[in-house]
Length: 127
Image (cartoon, rainbow, N blue to C red):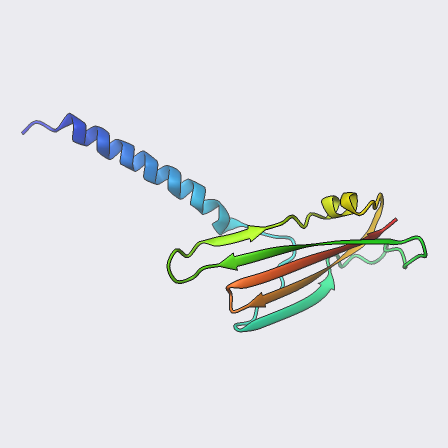
């Protein structure tokens, strides 16, 4: 029996499409953040410094500025199992937006509810 050329091409296209989708979706599975607080089963609320190196940390001064930004995360676990995150909490961007030229230190606040909703606030301090 002679193989159907259309069927072979269709199978190759579907295989390539499926592989491309898996590659795109797999990027989030290996995401690693520099700050990963412990998460509780029902509710978590953590406040801590971003860095644990306090040797060069400047004590608060009168000229010190403060800027912060908040990012949100939502995971829909029942139907689509998709996750969504929005807003930028990069320390460099927060400092730039707040007019901080030299960052002394940064703190974070993390809130997590039922593995579905999370909020991260980064506060940057400097001159």
